[in-house]
Image 1 (cartoon, rainbow, N blue to C red):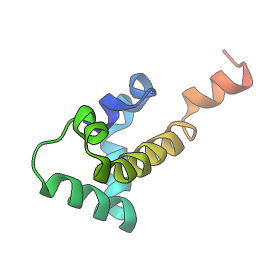
Image 2 (image 1 turned 120 degrees about the vertical axis):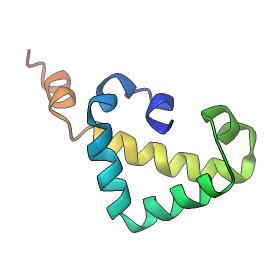
Image 3 (image 1 turned 60 degrees about the vertical axis):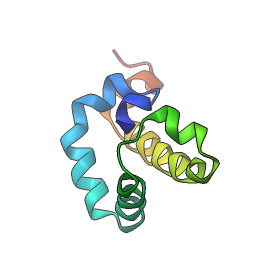
Length: 82
């Protein structure tokens, strides 16, 4: 769900299992995800519609952005490598 909401979803979807593993091992990210999903099914739209969830959404999107810029695909795009 979060990957689908990311502007980097095309690349990140290839790393979904790794992202899940890293998120589970990161205290702040795993707590935030637990808090968000405790409320039931969520969508990117529900994050934006609920002002109380805006901070959590921002944190999780920052996490995904960090992961994206750690991928070989991002490096190739930034460096101009083909």
